[in-house]
Length: 312
Length: 267
Image (cartoon, each protein chain N blue to C red):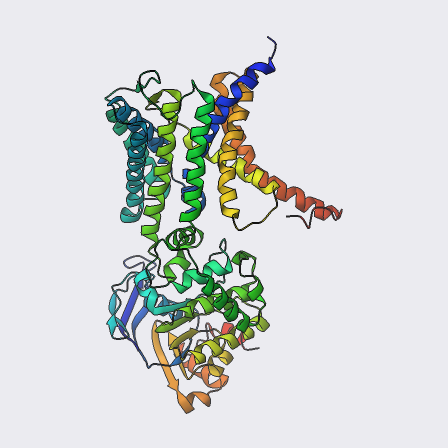
């Protein structure tokens, strides 16, 4: 049972492609969790919905790009649903998301023609990306990621996007400045889940099937990508007018790093059954880093070594 | 300018904790009035400001601002007419956003927020000038996150934001209470200047009776959700802290319950 580094290297392009796709998903999560500070659990459902819609439309002969576009629209509807449950009926954020997610399980089964999964073969259909061709898959996912970063950078720099950021940062101040925060929340959740569904549509094509379970754990993976990205982002201490775009770029980097770590875990023959446990440990560790960092800084300062205090 | 008629608000109605926070408040402000509001804890000072701002709907009465009945409007729809500064310096600004971004948000109060860039180059220069007038050194820190500012700086910035779009009424809810005495005086100076330069109609809640006497052209005292004393002009100029203490003690039935707290603030 020797470990052959060659197998790890040959699997790398696949991890890269999947990492970018999960990174796109994480960018969607970034809108709800980071910009709006709304813990939205819809995403497990909207990711699968995106995959299901994409595959069914491609199977019915529609062009793959159009299918992905439709997936985005369906994701937007999912987000609207959660947003309205929260703002119109006063249901708590987490519960609103869970309700939509649960409902989507049934909806997704219907979309998939009452089956748990549907395959779409790259031999029969023209797909945007597939695991059979890792190089072009990386390029295609990379183009989507770059376009998304550009659009998000622009949008959150507009008056409307700025109002959404203010809503997340300080809802009371936003109301006092005349912002309809309910509308901003619904809009942000719609955009967030639209992005997540886009990632679902790309993932379904990449793996060659859509599965009603494909979104399970998406939130945790997305959070892992965001947090790992932030850890790496902190290492680079440059400030440019494009800071925001760089932060978004590092969410994609986080997705890739997460997948490479997973790849290494598999390569080390970690039992597949333990992968979710492993994921949870990575996320818990990444979440703990800022706390641990701060504690170490404080204890160092107490010790009076004079180091590190000035840093960050 | 603003007229409150029989405004009533009961919290926790029908429970053991039922509290009549506003008990038929009547108040009429003339354009340009700078009214200071005093009263002991729980007298209804902040509650009255929140009723005007629309934080929650009132139970009875009417609020007319600039000839328009506003008591049924949600908070964000009243915002275009109101400038607000809060007791907690954290409340009035978005900490994760830049000084420039906060000002740009405030400059669009009551306007449609579309897909244009969130500030223009001209605004940037205007803000630099406005910040320069505050004299707090913020003009060179336009792109700094507001979370890095001190409490006093944040309150001064919030004042600027509250008046960037000229409000029909400025609501100051103990906006210097969380600051140290020196900073509080500085923020009050800035307040006086902004109010007089723009001849703003203003309601300023304060715990400090000296400040209440020294600032504004009119003073009202509240107790148990009602306005119990209202004076202006020459009469207000002659007021002393002792006069106010007397009013307080007669209002609280000589028991002097909250009186001791208020006396402590005078030293």
